[in-house]
Each structure stands twice: as C-alpha cells, then as structure tokens.
Image (tube, rainbow, N blue to C red; front, side, top):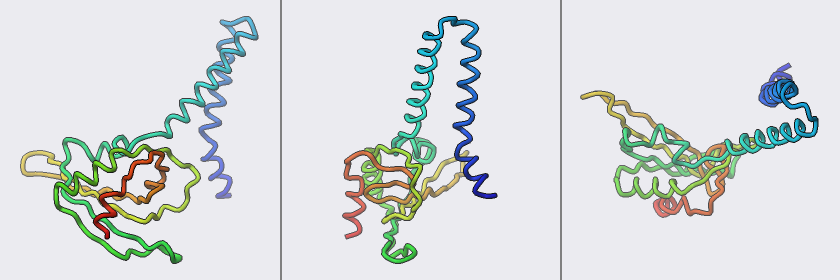
Length: 178
C-alpha cells in the first residue's frame, strides 16, 4: 500500500500537467477551428512546459542558500567535518570550526561559483564533507537569531544537487584538511 502512495506522489505533478493540457486543448478548440493549427499550438505548449520544468532543476549555490547567506545575516563560523565513507555507515574522522573571516570568505567565494542541477535519482546523501554554516541575524536591537545550515558536499554533489561546473569549489577546504 505504501508503494502505491509513493508512486502516486511521485507522478502527481504529471497528472496535474496532463489535466491542464487537456483543459487548455478543450478551451482552444472553441477559438481555433483548424486542427493543424491547434495541434501546433498544443505541441508548442507541451514542449514549452517540458522546457520550463527542466529549467527549474537548475540553480546556483547563491540562489539555493539566499535565505541563509545574505546581507542581513553575518556568517559567524563554518564547521567542517571530514567523513570516512568506506564502511557501512559514514564516520566522522576529523572536525574543525573556522572563525577567521578571511577563511570564511574564501570558502564562500569557492562555493559561489557552483552551478547545480537537482538529481531526482540520488539516494546516498552522505558526502566526503559535512559543512555547517552558522549565521547570525539581528532581529531587532539587542536581539539576534543564530542558525546553522548543514550541507553534505564532495567533488560531484552538494546535498541532492549534482555540481555541473568545473570550478574547484573544495580548494580552500582541502587546503585546511591537509
């Protein structure tokens, strides 16, 4: 029974798109009498929809973490955990916290160059490095909110996103680990 709900949830947006296309076709039949023109319009709408859906899978590191990393938030520290992935479970073999502003800026600058594509098929979310970015946001005078955003990253993936740029985004982190 759970498999039925899982499959239904995965295919729900396709069902909605199909219903929308059928509804638009019915409405356009009243305005476009020529069937070839109607077919052309519908093919264009379908291809445009496919293109728009595919483009929503692409993002950048900056866009993905814009709520956490913006002008209102001050990054206080970055924690780095190095994970050993050779066993059944990932095991943290080293950990450090960086408070130096210049190193924090170098790490974030390396990450800014990353372009990402959402990978729907990725299942293994443990990566070589676990990065915790701690930011402080002043809510009002003498009151602030501190949040930490954790990301799993290696040379090919950032969480469930595949890294599609050839930028050396781990340059600063790997120099610190050595």
